[in-house]
Image 1: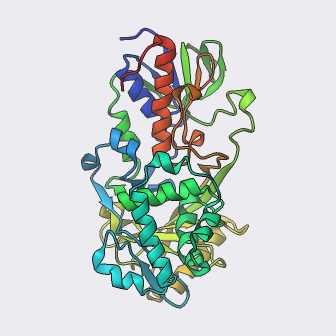
Image 2 (image 1 turned 60 degrees about the vertical axis):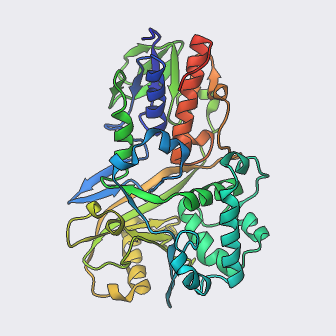
Image 3 (image 1 turned 45 degrees about the horizontal axis):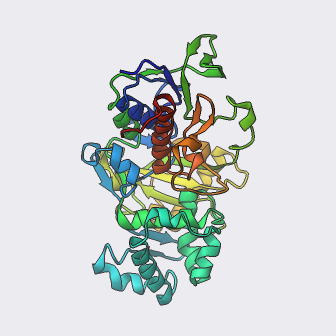
Length: 421
């Protein structure tokens, strides 16, 4: 076992994976977490028998890093059906993946979302991405997702009715200003795997990572006040010696010279309601392309994973990218009204608000989206390293990968030789 003291600040996915890799290398790291539990942005609350994730989140099973660290069978993954349901005030239309669901090819081709040419372009694009590696995607010239789709020749109707609400829900911005690299990466992940929920909620993911740790000490409810030379100082005044420190959280408050470099984030308001009637009778995400509505997307969580709600109840998750200046109470009333307008069957439903999550730092805004980087790029000064999806791209995959790379960098600096992972 290595004698060097390694501190990891933050028990999110990046910090937990960093600790896993440090243990593999023979270290006994210490994780310091300001919150009362692990998980960072990936957490699940239990409220009145419902499982409420902190924001609508899914695990894309094609993520390479997730496959390294997670046992999908033990997570008891529950899968969304490929495609989506597009709803407007007049009707609802289904978008299906013809490669995944051949029986729905005719329905897909003749649905009212986009043109026949749009459907063929999706089919060809999906096939092309299967032959393209993620590394190749992130080496492509970068533009915005919207510019990329227009250059591909998709009609405005297809962009407005499908791509904007679908990827707007993923990127948490409706204008599709996010990188074209991220658009293709996520589209490839959806095409090659499934969107899934652990049966016990997304919080089961950090719990599974933590269960892989055997010699790591996790200190909860401990906030780091500042980082010194070979030490960290906690808010309570306690000083802990450290040969290396990995900051697996937003570093701006701890490293003054980084102030302002990672301050741009996308936010989202996620609302949960219980209902006695379901607006969608299958495991699909509902997309709302109407720019005048607050709802960006919604789904019935227990149509995908039945453990998310008690028997006889339905758990509705609704994502709002732009609250239009309304407070939470006004948003609650408005989204219920919009739901009943979109789904007339809900007219007599009893819909009760459970909880809202305003997540101000849901996804990082990044100038240059990357898939990976050299481990040495994690290092910002002697003995100090960074980990977090904000270094690469906003995803579970990037968070895990950044943790692995930071641990790699620490090992190489301390031992000066190859890293075994």
